[in-house]
Image 1: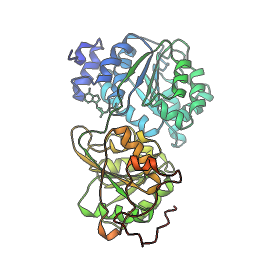
Image 2 (image 1 turned 120 degrees about the horizontal axis):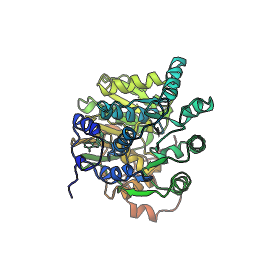
Image 3 (image 1 turned 120 degrees about the vertical axis):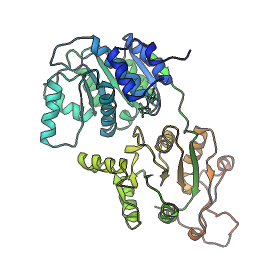
Image 4 (image 1 turned 90 degrees about the vertical axis):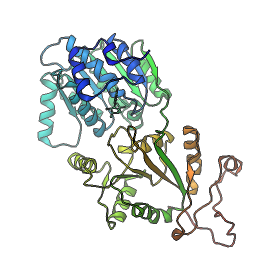
Length: 416
Ligand code: AMP
């Protein structure tokens, strides 16, 4: 059946918000989740960013808040998210939907000044409908004893797997112990490792489970890979950025030290470059993201802080300066380009040590990523070794012979 939003028993005011946002048809996760949440069920949603999961929980939760009165100073729903960026993005989505519903929200995250703390305290004590918080900051407020969660209707754990990866398990348990036992709990996670199963068993009551199959990279993304030695990477990135005029590019590095190095290396180009990593203050992070959003900055060099959930239109190119440690993060990273129905390009740099992880990515996305020759000016790169040949190799890893049988050439040391 071709479901429409109007088929759901959502509050009329929510439909006004949906019209204003231009949403017509619910996505698969919305089709499954909205009726269950409206029935008051607990829910495990295995789904990634990009599937429409934020609206899948925000819309029914908002509708339930409109029809369930509570004392004036109490918080209605609490959303816990792993990063400030995601918390802010959820808050922005909420603001769009809630405009006509007259519901209030506040994002609670670290990195602000004392004045910010007081504003957050006010939000947590004066009856805000929806609080969106990162775990650590919420704990600081909870420890001070004034957070009004006694009549909380719904708790939402968003990107639960990411939160556990980031070491927030204890914080999450602490937060949950401060909440009323009788509540609705929704848990969203891109993956379902055993630790998430355990957490679900502890905090959810007879949950329904929805699986939205792992979303493969959008068809509009051209995916290419360069086999490179580490010493060739900076030259290659400069070459790619200078080959054609680009307005919006993200370069992903796994470590913040690399982010800073690459930002410096790229400063000399005609493009405006900024970096994003966990050492930045909250206001700096917001400025960096705003500059990138409005194209004041053309190249954003970032850690995986922005690989998930960040929704910016018109990113033309994603460069993976190195491979993410988790194959699924590859899908998240390259999903920053070709949002909606647009097209984009994702280039990945693979050094010989990363071949194993590279094969894992190709298995996950069930297709080969096109191997691209290095530009001549960079010299020869390492040889690509197919997954079949790679498996046959001794455990010490791939040889570093270059393509084209240059047997006499000294092998390069590829140590970082
Ligand atoms: P999310 O997975 O929640 O991060 O959503 C990904 C993007 O899809 C966001 O830009 C949403 O605004 C958009 N979106 C979500 N649901 C719908 C829908 N039913 N129709 C159109 N766009 C949507």
